[in-house]
Structures are given as structure tokens and as C-alpha cells.
Image (cartoon, rainbow over all chains, first blue to last red):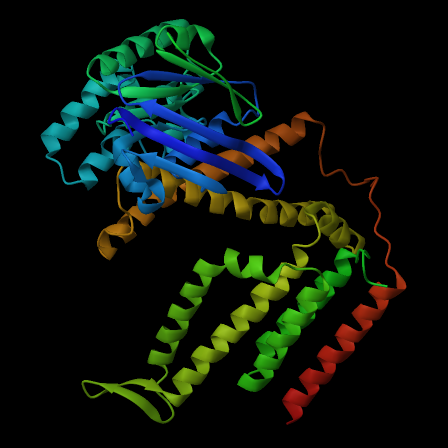
Length: 224
Length: 246
């Protein structure tokens, strides 16, 4: 495998019900420094593919490799340390009582210096325009704010790679532009990403490669 | 007769009530084993997927075993079986109580799985036709509906924590407990918010617990339902009388 191939899917197959594959024999190599867009209609298997890559779901058949390592031999935490994953529903990210705690929780748990944690939290609150919500409950903020908080919570971990499932849901044009800017900056720093989206305008601003899936199969795969 | 036959949820509720009553009132371990075997057979008869039920409650089984061990340690009557540093850690009575607890819990859990073979709508209707006020029956059904949501919320939160790079299984137990207690409030708050949204959604669709209700679904008991209810009650009464008069 090419050293740049960060994620590799081999004969990946997944079904919830027998004889009804959601992912049907997908073979794919994703490079680390690229922005890959995965597009497709509702129910085509995009989110399931993302969950299979992250190890949240186990494939019925086939393998997923991250940095040449079969993810069956990795824990969710090991995968999560390499890839920052944004759930389609941002509420699934939250497990803290306030926005501020949500951002700092993991760094504090890892035993990092309090000043460093506070700086990182403040920086991200500012970047995603969430300062005024610092003491609010993540569950009681608006949909767009939840989405921004979920993305910020991933970025605070300094991931090597990002897998974003519908990152623009609930974001207005101004916030989308901010997100595009942030993601472009991250990509310049060598952080690659896979974006699962319906938002063609958003992915066109970022992608190097576009993959279309339909009924669990890749029907189009093109680099620009 | 039974293949493809759909039992009335009231029959299932009666059977579950009978089995769990026996599980609670009987103390003898061999009788409890007999009731458990009977529970498995009855569950199989009602098409419960025993293997899947075992898989679903795997984690709960660990908890049951831990509670049983703690219970056996704190019951010091009877002959001592194990001493540690001069302290009686395990006794015959403690061991007996631990085994009783495990068997009882298994009987209750697997008999309750029988109710799961009917959908919540049928269960509400069963309660209503038994004379329970609709509001209470509906609340019970909603409670049943929310249990898997609560489990899902806990699972999602744990996945989210792990995906942020925290090895939840490798951190010291004290820290792990603090994480669990930490995520408890947002999970509970999330569930309450979901319940609130659900109540708004159903009211927006014109739903209310009106005094006069017409139901499209009306349950009708067959002769097989009556027969099973009759056998269950007679058998339960018989076993209970034998148990108390022995």
C-alpha cells in the first residue's frame, strides 16, 4: 500500500438485514493529505460507510485499514485519536453540561495543563463564534450552534485526519464560509479529510477527489 | 395450531405475571431452576429469540453476578466456605442467596422478554381492555418506548467519548466512575428534552387522552388465549400452594 494511503477499504460489505446490503463490496484507498468528498442520495450508504471507517459499525465482510492497520485490532479511542469524526447528528457528540466543559473535557481528562486547556477552549470559542454560549448547555443551543460546537470539539483534539458527516447542516452562508476557511487552513497544515455531504457548493470549495455512491456501490470516482 | 398464531398481549402479560410471581415467592434453589427452565420453554413457545436476549443482557448479567457475589459475602449465616484473613467471606447461606438472586433475575428478565414479542400499541390496547385508564396505559407504553432510547443515549455518549481518544476501559475505575456520573446529567436532560419534543409533536397531531376514545385496534381473545391463561393461573396457584405447604 502506498504510504500516502491513509484509509483503505477492502471488499467492504455491510448489511443490517440479510440479503439487503447497505455497503456492497466497496474497495477504496483514501490519501491522507487530500480532501475527499463522498456524495450520494439519501439512503445510499454514505453515513454507514463513515461509521464503518470509524469502527462504530463492524463490517459484515471485508476489512478497513487505517495507516495499514486493520481497525478490528484497534480500539475506538485509537481510531478517534487519528481521525476526528463528526456525527451526522451533532447532539450525539455532547456529554457535558456546558459548552465550555464540552470543549475542555477531553484535554482535562488527558491531564493537560489548565492554562493550555483554557487557551485552546477560548481560541475555538472565538473561531466558531460561540463565546456568548460558553455557560449554556450544549443541548439547549440552536442547531447551527450545535454543529459549530461539535466541529470545535473535534478540532480541539488535534486530529491527523477528519471525517465529517454533513458538516454544513444548520449552518448559514456566513458560518459555511468560516468553516470552509478553517478546513482549508487545516488542509494546508497537512490534515486531510473526507466530507460526506449533500452540499455541492460546500464540497466544491474544498475537494480534490469526489466519490459518488449509490445503493452502497461506488458509481463515480474522480480526482480534479 | 400454534404455528403462525398470534397470541393476545393480555395472555402474555398474564403468563409473565405468573412466572415472575413464582420467581419471587419461591426460595428453594431447585424449584427456582425448574421455574427458569419452564421460563425458557415458555419464552421459546412465544417465539422469543433466547440467543439474542442473552446477547442483549450480557452486560446486565455481569452486574447480576457482581451483586450476587456481594450479597453472598454479606450473608454470614450458615457454614463458612471461605476465610480471608480470619474473616468469613463466603458461607453456605450467602452462596445460596447469591444463586437465588441470579435465578430470580434470570426468570424475571426472560419472562419479560415475552412481552417484547407484542408491539407497544398492542400492549396499551391490552391494558385499556383490561380496564386501565388510557392515560396510564399510554404512559406505561411510552416508558417502555423510552428505555431503548435511554440505552442508545448512554451508548452514543460512550462512543463519542472514546472517539475523542479516551480509552474508557483502560482508565482507573475511580476516574471511570466519575466519567459515568459526569455524563449522567446530560443524558437524563437529553431524554427529558426528547420526551418534551415528543409530547409537543403528538399534541400538534391532535392527540390527547380524551375520555371517549374509539380504537381501530380491538383485541379479541381466542380459545387458545383463554386456555393458556387458565393453565397459567392454575399451575401458578398449584406450585405456590405446594411451596407454602411443604
